[in-house]
Image 1 (cartoon, rainbow, N blue to C red):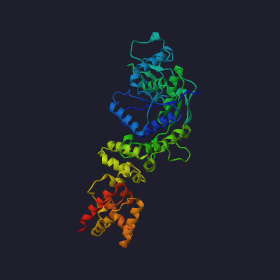
Image 2: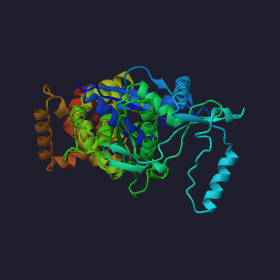
Image 3: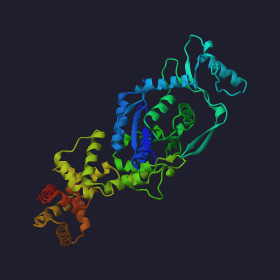
Image 4: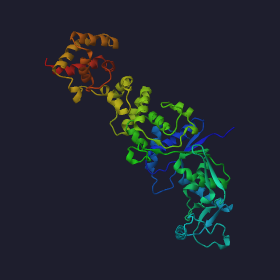
Length: 470
């Protein structure tokens, strides 16, 4: 029986959750969740100057919005420093690493001379095979003994087999002269201790894999499955950066994209399952596999994101969508809904969630249900309320004093009234939209009347008709 899958997401807390990081987290989450495995979270906070609690909180908030729940406690790389150091000393004791007393100046001089002579600038330490008796009483770093012949093959599930000549690998520093571990050592030790079976990360780490494999092999540890995924590019084909607009996961939440739409879009950004574009979380977990990840960089396309977001809004459960709107309003710094507005929004949800690509669009469609009397008309709506149309609304109101407030009866009443005025219902719809919502573009007049109810509908029509001069 194969070991359970364990993946991890290991961000550095130096800012928000970048959209590329969010996709990496999603791929790891999908791979683990689809196989009954574990998805772990490690904060790589060894850079004490740049790592902040606020940045860690921003990463956690971004993951929380995207619904990427992790298993177990969050691991702090910084807190594991004593363990990292112990591994370096274990390799030293086993003769697989050595003390190097070369100063930064000596190394810089060596590289300058090699460059001038047109030779390889890869540093070869004279201390690699020096007898301990020759060691000076001076600061030293601990370097691993890299293999000097043969080749290292990174068997990558996305990139294929990547071969690196061992004479291109230097004796990497494991422990600095102040006793602090380097990032490369910390990552390997943490991944091993956490039981990580699959390392799914950006392909900017591909070259690191060969150097990290030296540590795995020197310690006799099993090398994880590698999967280095292409980076995300902007629409112009260049690496996604600040010039392309919003970058943090929370910025997309504040712009009003639903989490399900963003998950769906990010999953399709570099991974595919046949021609499927729109899918649920359950389908994504079931379908996601490393073999479906392409080698080429994916391009971020806001129109595709909007399209998928609209489909997820349309299919969402009404109560869940309302809950997400509450979080969106908070994330974007807007005033929360009152209880009355929440109740009305829930009633209106079936007729406003269709064809809304973002939550702000949905709320705009729901304006009629969220506003209160007297309803203020915007400029376009006000044009529909001239003296003639206000008079028509005043005449219409008694016809709506009906015992049956159902869609079929309302359609009959309004159509009969339009015929009596020798006009079409379309001519009546504009003034009704303006009176009921204060907007020119709204859900259907009948849907609004049903959501508002008879009493509120009649009150709003009366308000609008008051200026008819009678």
